[in-house]
Amino acid sequence: MDRFDAMQAFVRVVEAGSFTKAAETLHMSKTTVTQLVQQLEARLRVKLLNRTTRKVNVTTDGAVYYERVIRLLADMDDAETSVSNAQAQPRGRLRVDVPSPLAAMILVPALPAFYARYPDIQIDMGVSDRIVDMIDEKVDCVVRGGELTDQSLVARRVGDLALGVFAAPSYLTRFGRPAHPRELEDSHHRTVGFLWARTGKSLPYAMRRDSELLHVKGRYALAIDDGNAYLAAGLAGLGVLWLPEYMSRRHHAQGELVPLFEDWQLDPMPLYVAYPPNRHVNAKLRVFIDWVVELMAQHAPVAAKGRV
Image 1 (cartoon, rainbow, N blue to C red):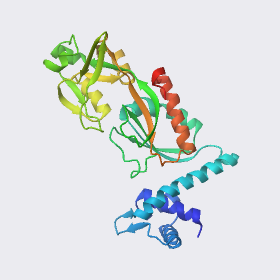
Image 2: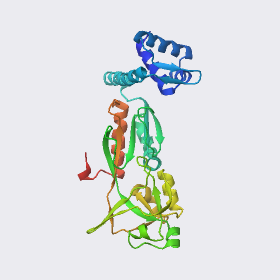
Image 3: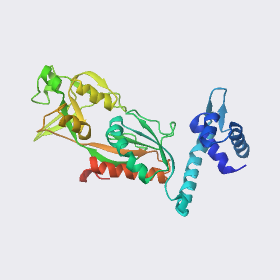
Image 4: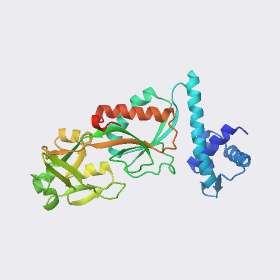
């Protein structure tokens, strides 16, 4: 038994959830993959996988072994990269999860330049604003806006998103232009609520003008948990929006959104790249994080006082 092939086969079965899919990605027969995993279990004298006719699940021992094996395989990949010119470029599959507007407006349009530098990296990009179980879903890193509440993650602050308040012309025609942020709380005005994944609630925004400090959430008829849909609701005139500058820029320039309360200041929204503490920062993850840092330095650099 080739222990490296057996470990790689086991990892692929865990990640794919089936021997058939793992065999396809490894370009092996299902029989070969099955035999490799069986030989690995025999060598270790533990059951790594529970098999049924429909599904393969990792056992408790298998989950512990998986976490150690993926770090070992990543270390081996890094070692080969460091000593061989033929392996000079980071390569392999990277699983990331990013907010939908950031993906559509910044990250995906910039990917051609990333692939020009790192053509051998394959990215599986989940696009969502939900909370991701990074261990169970085998995600290498996430990009998230707002303060991180999960202190178990290793996080790097990569940007500060400037915020503004906006409404569509159709909304202002129907409801009028509010003169003060407090009007969003106690009048006929409406906001579009954004449901944050970590709370399931729409949260207030701190707004400052001179010595005035307000925490404004407003009353909403519609609340949404996806950034692109949130923007679409505002463009449709369904309520007032709080938006990062990168999301509002084009629509403001085209007259589709009108800025409100321009004499008020809002704290920027921090943007983080985060990954589990047991996730090995291999070459491909390292260059991806560095690329996000470079990209956000162009679009929303970290404020000097917020650098970490």
